[in-house]
Length: 115
Length: 115
Image (tube, one colour):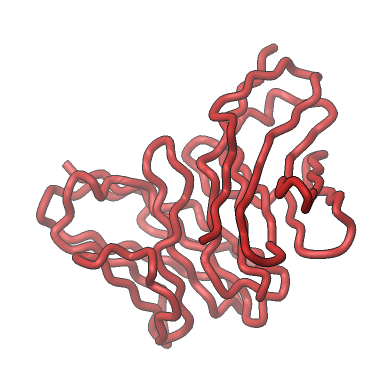
């Protein structure tokens, strides 16, 4: 059973370009979470999605960031017009429906560098 | 709002010595508590979790943690560390309703193992 998959693992963008980060949850998992980790910091929650629905986006910056989890295919975190401050590791996690244990399973992350 | 404090940014321990990493949380209800480990350039791996029952929980790789409600703490322990335990350790708190929220992470403790 494959774990949470994220691609690309490393992404380099110039200021003003768009970044698209993909996350495929574990098989049978319908909940996806995105986190951002800045250097020397812990992970900060960004957004929680279920299939075709955004449940909680309280941690998302108000501008330039968006996320989706379509009926088919991976979840996408999209950052438009990237700036140097967007350089970070972005982690995706997934959990099954009715997750009584509260555990989230993390992917290996995408490390975004903005030049 | 919930918060997690890991007061030690770095800890250095000799190989074979015992280890305790501190974690304090602030949460308005019964929390779900987690310890994750992150090796350099990698994603997060769950070491152990607490959400009910016995307050002393056993995890993988010989780790254990004790939930102390009176002290709002969930400290991680290991009786004898190995060089391979060198990594970043994160304490996290989740919503006790069951996986319905993003996790709140501490800033992490960087564990260094001396030969």
